[in-house]
Image 1: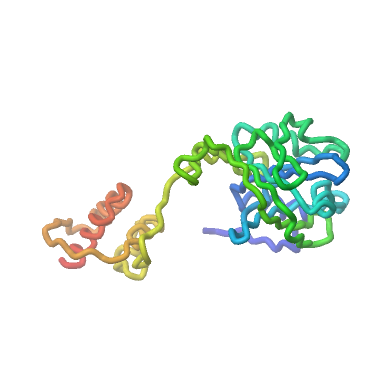
Image 2: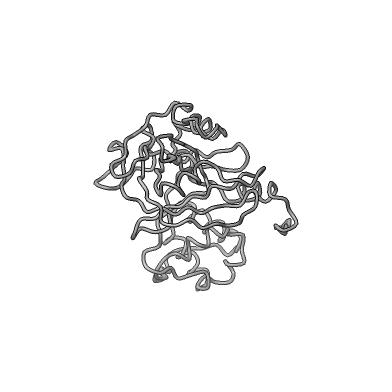
Length: 281
């Protein structure tokens, strides 16, 4: 690869921001509900968002200071005051409304109303969630980490989940959520989003510890096999016993192609038999 190199200190805030949101993607979107303590609700989406532990269950998101004025926005001010908020997961059916909620309305404007969302009453806090979302979390403030005091600086808000509200229809078995049914949206760079349901693929972790790349013979490590293909070969827990009845070509290029075909068809045992018999020739 030929890399372009950037020193963030040589860039303006806008360039660093766009490099980050384009490279760190797709990101889940938190539709954060808050209130000002006087009955006025606020709703805003954040894609600098994720989970940070399960005991206690902690989620975090980062509202930035205004890139123009350096002043805090309503969500940060509200949570600093009330110490509570909701996070509703954004799905494909909510993406246009979520985009509308991202507009910079005045602090006295209710984004639930502007974006056409219904308020879902929380069980233990005063802030509502978004009823149209299949996955809502009620949170109390754990900590706010100021990440700078300049325009565009982040404020990492960490919250403990006090209650989950999850649509029964998205479960597939007991407490397992079906990823196709929840259908979250991911945020990418610029105006781009990712529809997770269309991008899903399954990848099971190795059972036990994989043998690793260093167990693959050098002829194949330095071949045209891709990193992903080699990783599949390296993910088995033990190299199989050789079956000498397996016939292999005398041409290394044909052998590598045969291994590639086997790996692409998840025939890892067969691929290893080809490798072992090549070594045994």
